Image (cartoon, rainbow, N blue to C red; front, side):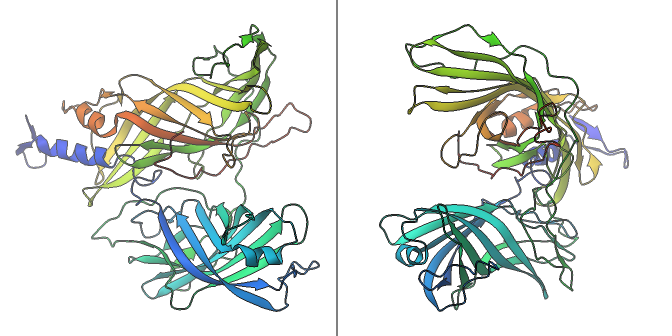
Length: 517
């Protein structure tokens, strides 16, 4: 088949349209609103020299300043990991993913400056980062990185692991942007009792503490848009005099003032809840009055074939509020091993996700993805007798994807009005209750994740008759696509004091392409 170029009157092979379509599919979920244009999470292992306070000397209690008595110096190995785009655009923020800082310090030396018998500690890390591009430079302070650690009974090392969101970086000209680690401060507080101690670390002499490099091409080599994310947890940032802008710390974002007036209605889908242990006899389900609450849930949908992740309900834009009729039904055991469950019904109208990428490394392609989401059933409970009972949380729903508003190098690419998955697919997300897993319950939220099977695409036919169903199916459809969502604590407007209101928008969860639920 051949098509006519209306500008020249010449007929050109329809294959060119297919090539442009293939470029679209190859990077559909990349760029703004996604993470497919990123390299795997970058991790730098750095050598630091750390000054410890003298044994038994905590921070000054009156001011919180580090102790000024004699300090010993020890070696530490520090791993700094984050997620960054491979390329960025002049004038648009570069948004690092959640930053992880893991410091391995000599166990005996660190234990000596903590109160005798300390086993668990909390820690806050502050990392100075030098940003340089061409002859320009600026300094950022990645602070508010929270973590915990356990003093092992034996062994040479003790690890303090921290995580948090950090500042965005915007540059005003092309050229490689380099992030170089500077001083690291650890403020360590014993969990049981005692004042905090401060450990001050500097990069070891001769160690180039390069964290990451991001390419910012010029106009003759357009780049993909940087990925979206959050930038809380940073202070002390400043704008460089020659065009590097490090964003200041924003306040915790909030959205709507209260919940929608109407509760979700419909049938519960209990097909994905875990069964009780053998020998358990359940009572018939008991209907409850329910509780009107709402919450924001934000996260990623990863496409395994593209090794990339689209931001769902982007917190940096205008996310949608999830409306929940909490605890509308309960089920518990009549006899046998313990089992109890509370079921809730929810609904959310997710906003479109916008996507930008470079087809074949040079042709900017943009597209929008619409999520058509059915009612959500959220079930939480416990299986098995104490102390071995296991909590569970399951959120399940059906969803379809529709792709539209596609442009290649600014020129619309017609995929038709009904380019979508051929049928709805089930998404089942489960809460992680392991230590550090982050999920609490339906009212307090946390991280849920699960694998989905994306069906084949249909209806991707433009007015010219070009059918690109097979391209979308080959590049996107299939099993093993990880969805990870972070649900905030609910707003309960009818509770005493309207607890949790207004609802708060949570940060994006740490991105993972390899972890399965």
